[in-house]
Amino acid sequence: MTATIRPAEGRPAPVNPQLARVFAPPVMEARRWLTETRLPEGLELLNLSQAAPVDPPPERLRAAMAGAVGAPGEAHLYGAVLGDGPLRAQIAADWSEHYGAPIAPEQVAITAGCNQAFCAAIATLCAPGDAVLLPVPWYFNHKMWLGMQGIEAVPLPCGPDMVPDLAAARALLTPQTRALVLVTPNNPTGVEYPPGLMEAAYDLAREAGIGLIVDETYRDFHSAAGAPHGLFARPDWDGTLIHLYSFSKVFRLTGHRTGAIVTGAARLAEAEKFLDTVTICPPRTGQIAALEGLRHLRQWVAGERAEILARRDALRAAFAGLEGWQVLGSGAYFAWVRPPFDMASDRLALRLLEDQAILTLPGTMFVPEAAAAAGNRALRIAFANADAAGLAEMGRRLAAFAP
Image (cartoon, rainbow, N blue to C red; front, side, top):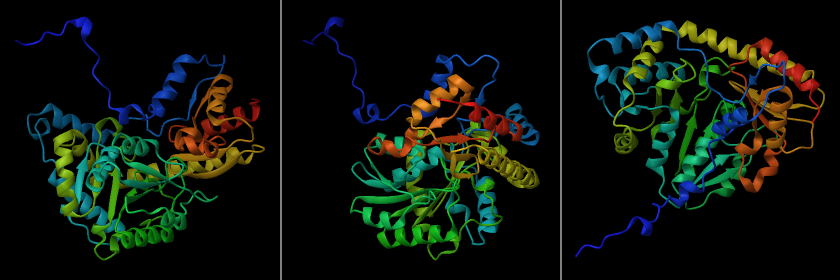
């Protein structure tokens, strides 16, 4: 006889404890602050919390996507797990030109955004119990994914210039270490890692037999013209380097989820298992837009880069006039700043919202709990959606702020 479980005897289904231990998404937390906080009368919100362009993609890309969606054809069907062939080939050609080294289409895969590119890269490198070196302050989604997978995120300290300490990285290596992650230009600090640092990080990773994951989501807004490093010119680079990229920022395709991995074909064959299981294929319309942009919008991208660099300069000018505030790093979409107040950064961020209608993310969201003090005196400012006038207004409000 089959036993019958009465409703009163039932228990709720379990929750994965690794997932439950992961902190809530910081950007969602900031949005909650907005719903719960009454803004000061007469001040419009200055939202400096999220690194996502709010403007739509350029008209040419919208037209390309609309044409594909409005017509019967492949845009409505499953595509290749590793992405559409023409886009992979275009990335290989453009990256070969940009970095001055040959890259083959077989060394390129398309993903549903750069976050998924990171997840796929980690899936090819790590098992539960392994370890990955993450510079602190870190990009919180990287830390979240590692925690969900039971992989240790080992905090790698940065120096006063916010550049990772590679001597410390060497000392932190263990038999469980599988990768070193670098984000440049950096999220959250905006700092551009110098070519010498990138070369030394590659040497360390190759010597240790670990992966070097380089997330270049913000590469198109780098202040230096040309290649930011020479890693693709290294012999057998694809056995060590795993390059990640995003089209979300450069072409404003955040909602269309289009990213890329460039690494060895053998590793991509392993990543294909992960990607097929998770998404089957990357979104087709985003790929259509990315290909159109790569082929036709170089000058437009140059204009976007110039505008972001001008906003960086406007931000630096705004802080130059503020007594006690320090800009520890700035570039691409971000600035990492130290306020002159003896107040925890999470509390300070709320006070700035309540008093001056400025929304930023506190440094505590980018550091491990054990090192919370390192984030207690910092704020991340994302300025991609604030023009020069908005950043000047930010400066005026910060000057008027008294905690």
